[in-house]
Length: 160
Image (tube, rainbow, N blue to C red; front, top):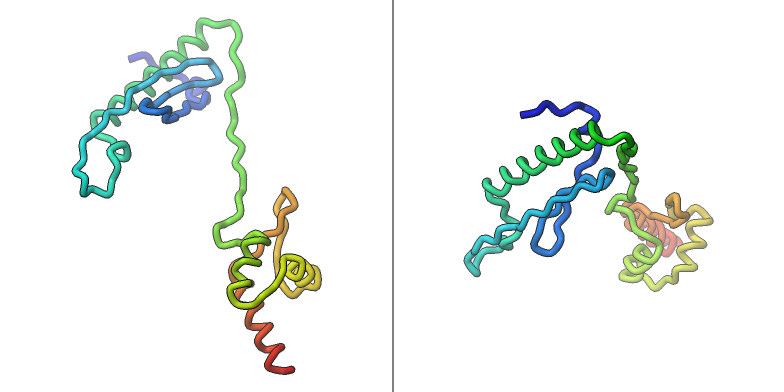
């Protein structure tokens, strides 16, 4: 087997399911390979779908195809005068599942008391409800604020 350089491995390999095929590709160089996904028969009582099970043979076949893609990438790098820079993946930070959006928080709050989104917005601006804003400007409210806010409302109504 030919030795593959480190630079070759810096080009990302993408695995994607398209209908009943697994497509392995190096999009930067335009190298694509289709593998038909084998269907295994399961009993009707099984909770696992047929496509969720990857046989050991199919896993081995995927590993061989990845190895071939690396070799094709190495050949491309050696034969072509020009090659693109390898793609980089941007890691995006997403809000945790524990945080509510403003409409979600309002719906949850409406299970206990009747309140509008504008009332929740006013409470946020007064500091009655803690929240933070995403890069896109959307408000995210921690789950812990729901119980805390309901407790504060209960104590206010008891005092009055």
